[in-house]
Amino acid sequence: MNDHPIKGLLDSTLQNIRNLVDVDTIIGEQITTADGTVIIPVSKVSLGFASGGSDLPTKTEKEIFGGGGGAGATINPVAFIVVSQGQVKLLQITQNSSTADNAISMVPELIDKIVSLFNKDKKNGDPKIDPPATGI
Image (cartoon, rainbow, N blue to C red; front, side, top):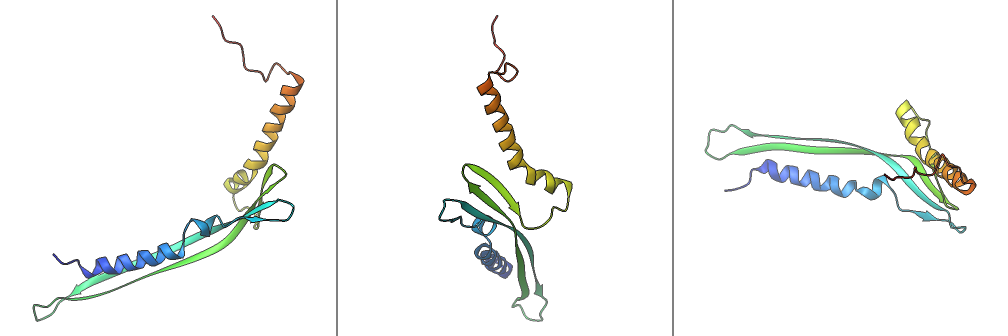
């Protein structure tokens, strides 16, 4: 059985989208500076896609198909991940627009602070941080 023309139309459009946007578009290729700092660009990708078609009525037995498809994409740089001297920082290009954005941007700094707190307390032998002894 022959494939319907809409299948070819959709396949072609989706293949072009795959070529346009891939993982390297969102998390860019890392850049290493002379002092060893690694900078990784992060982008926001938005996609729009539409496709459609129809078999058109004819007075003959031959089928006529008409259709079209299209896609659009926008790519906006939003941040840089910077790895320097064992620390990871997220440098945002734009201001956070919501509470969720603020919370996400604070995660790397919060993890660094928690790790340093645990390391400092372990060195001092603080019993509150050590795991409780188990036994019967």
